[in-house]
Amino acid sequence: MSAQQAQSLAPLRAFIHSWAVFVEIERHPHRAARLHALEQLVQEGTDDPASALAEIQQILDKAEADTGL
Image 1: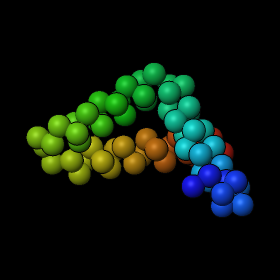
Image 2: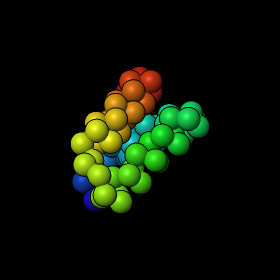
Image 3: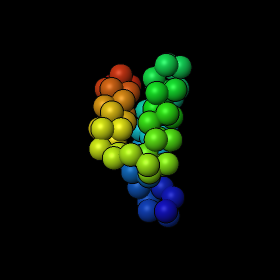
């Protein structure tokens, strides 16, 4: 649903938030590479994903905090 359809800025704010976190991760090549490696690990499904998912969440939380949102 678009912001215009909802007559709300919430969808736009959600997009900007997601985009800011994405950009913050990609600004740091080591962080981005680690995130992508973890995502690949989870996607392969060969190992227990719990530790990879926990580290992914840490990366996302750090990026969110760094954006100041």
